[in-house]
Image (cartoon, rainbow, N blue to C red):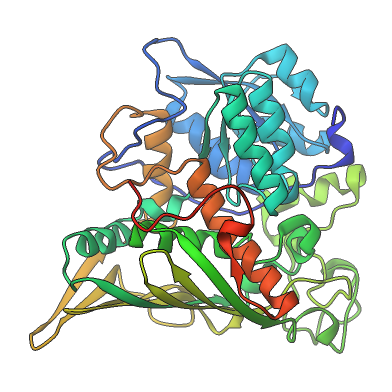
Length: 449
């Protein structure tokens, strides 16, 4: 545990951001404080996601209220690159506990490989810090329980960064459901599509290994399950799932170690020239000599053991049934969702990228039984539909504002999101439904208070 080199790898995800609009805030933010002194922040995991969403953007927007006091990574070259990107002068570490002892941060930001989140969340709380962690909170039920126990034991707080909750169109869905626009919700159809660029990218990186990401049931779908839990204001009771790996990995007829060294560049439609991205080159290509990690791994590597198509039926404690699916090789990126209620239907087809024409707004369709159809247009914004900047503002700038739409997420929210995916993964392997209450000591409630 003392040497980060033995366990950590990196996260990456390029994300632009904009300044926040109206703050919609949490009831118990880790930054709530009566002091005017800057809060000391440390980060473990200085990959793409950490340096962008929680690095450069945070320094740019909140340097008057926070100060980075330490950056930690197994890759010393990447840590140095991150420091330059953030334009800060804090010390660098490869030993996590040494960083915690010497810098004594108020807040620890955890953006490491998913399967290592629990180690840093727990030790970070034990060493005096509140935690801001990327989703997923962790990757299996044992680690989840350990985090919940440590939070109770230490009195520190875990905030899970579910940025999708903060995008305006998803907030509008929440508002309409709370207003009873379609009566009592009875079922949901929810289908997510990853395209042959973004979807394929999960199979190039460390996410391709279930032991590191928990599979896309946990790494990616925990976002979607959290949205369901939040929209429905209830908690999942059971899940039954099916899926397969039948497009990437061993299914390929050509393969290599990574794209740059591959003999099939000319014929492979998934060829990815990482050197065309200056940021990825600086973080990964220029620092491969330290850890051997390839950001442009082959999507057909035979060690890939996650699934590329998934489907689940989720039953909620309030009686709502959900039909969910995730596909990772679609021609476009986005999702379709429909809430069916006793008085109508609320639906959206959100096109996030790809070959389809993209309008400057997202559109919701509200259909009333025996009534008119209303189309509601929500302006788009950068950063997960505008959610990134609003979430950062919530955490760092306005921690004491009212959380009007219950968008702040703590450890229970983080747990309930991953437990659906963990249950789905188990269900696939056993062929049986999995009860969420059997995974940890959390008991699903029908109506969240």
